[in-house]
Length: 143
Image: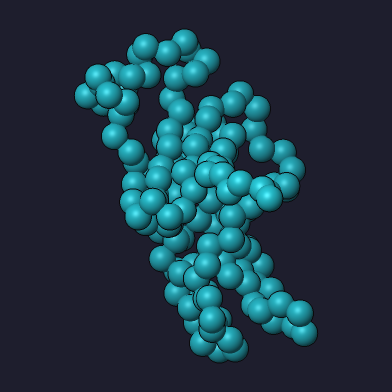
């Protein structure tokens, strides 16, 4: 029998703090306090080698959701994500009620820097969902 393990989702990005702030706003997550012995994350960053500086994280304040980690990489995003987050904005809703919930969440996220993608309407197998992108173009779905 497998043991359940905690996990984090890691994003490669150009501006880790900017992407972390977006996801904090999108999910209601928070930036955790800096490691013990440091007053700020900037203080901690100064102790790291240059290639490791500037990373960021955000956590679910309830402790239920996974930690998100954002690390700086030199190359930009080139192709579609192989993994993406589904933001559960319409759980349990169907039809027009679900579409209204997806549209309302989309309207909330756009001022945070999200970009609206394509609306996929319900079919025989799946409920409606809305494709979007975060501030660096990482795809995610409102579903």
